[in-house]
Amino acid sequence: MKSFVSRGFPLLLVLLLAGCQSAPQPANRPLDDLASAFRQLDQSLASGDLSGAESQLGSLQQRAAGDTRLEQYQRQLAEAHLQQGQQALQAGDLDNATKALSRARSLMPQAPALTTGLDGAIAQARTAQEQAAAAAAARLQQAQQLRMATERQAAAIQATQLPNVPVEPVAPAKPQARLIDPAAASSVIGMPMLDNQDNQRLRNLLDDVAADMLAFNCAVRIEVRQAKDFPWVASLLQARIKRLDPSFSPRISQVIKPAQVPQLVLSPQR
Image (cartoon, rainbow, N blue to C red; front, side, top):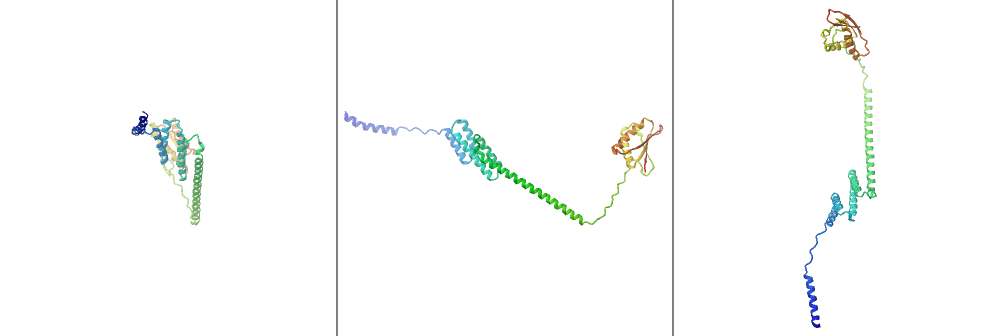
């Protein structure tokens, strides 16, 4: 019995080992979704795709809130934006440098010291840019003033070289009469529209009468059928004279002639 056990034990051990070797191995498990997402985020950061990395980080912050790795990636992304801003600043692109600084601040609002260096560098660059623009504007203004002074000096020199030519006085233009004959002692102007009560034609006529009175210093005699017509005609005429020359004092007289068509008699005063 003892010899059987001693002979059977090695055989049993061999069978057990063979069974272990031939037992099916478990299949490889699929990668964890979060691990794959973090790997993609790493690749985006490594390739410089900051926009894609920021979108992936936002998605992870919703899916894995509280994951301790998120803060590390958030800081890495902020530092990448700062590096991008430094490169833009060195290239003189202040607008893109400012945008990169703003993105870094939004990612790490709790760490303002992180963005202090780039912020100060951008402020200095903007100050230098403004000072350069002001200096350029001052140089341009100085050049314009120098050119104007040179032109004035040249004009003055040219004026001294021209011969003194006497300037003939320009005779004033002779006034043109509208209704009267300026050479006659008096001119008669009919007013039939007063009988017809055509006030518009009367006003038009008196416009020309007033112009002739001022141009040739005329006295006027208003001849009407009724005494009530005189104030009406006289007021219309005086209003037109005042509009043309408020300082002119018209000499107006009246005559009542019931049987005669209303008229005006203008006499130039020489």
